[in-house]
Amino acid sequence: MLRNCQLIQSVTKRTRLTQFAAAAYSTTPLPPSKKTPPFVAKLTTQRKLESEDFSRFGWKSAAAFIASSGILYAYFEYEKAKIAKFKAEAAQKEQGVGKPQIGGPFSLVNTEGVPVSDADFRGKFMLLYFGYTFCPDVCPEELDKMAKVVDNLKNLRKDQTIVPIFISCDPKRDSIENIKEYLKDFHPDFIGMTGTHAQIKRAAKAYRLYFSAPPLALDDDDSDYLVDHSIFFYLVDPDGKYIAHFGKQETSDSVTVKILDFLKLKGM
Ligand code: NI
Image (cartoon, rainbow, N blue to C red):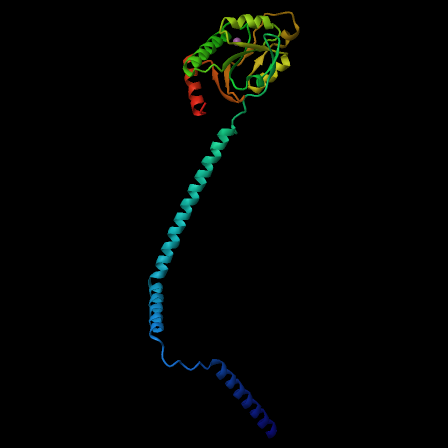
């Protein structure tokens, strides 16, 4: 029993010694150098001062810096978003997104009986009107107005590329001879067009223009009827793109001014 105790004691002692030695070895600092060189001492002092400075003012200025960069960041993000929004809106306007698409191809027949399409007018401005020669008052007024606009533009822009076009939306009664004679009263430049009911319907649809030839009028001999139609004329650019349309309330002068403004805006 005693022997056992002694053994345990001695083992414990030895272990403790070893532990002590190991600890001593690992933590014993290196012997200090003879003397710290002055520049090192100076540096150390400076660092110590700086770190004190930092602890005194550092957090405040860091906080201020973070706060101000936060504000700046938010501001730049805001500006960036504003510019992006502006650009997107400009692009949308340019593409006409959000606005109903107006205009498009048509294929009809002119008063010489020759097939014509919108493509034949590339390089020219078209002033397009849909009407019918039997129209009692509205069409004559509008065609007169268009004729004046054409003269105004020719004089003011010295531009001979403006072509007034009349598309009949009453193919049953408007023969090509009728149309030709009728347009002579308005302007020598007028080009008259007609086509099958389906062709005219397609052209009108492209321009979002409504017209009604009463169904009876298509088959019947009765030729005393009115065609209800929207009253607009359209300005189409030399690339075949719709620029604007003008309603009944406009005068030849107001249309001229608006067209000149549109063309100026477009750099044309
Ligand atoms: Ni009319």
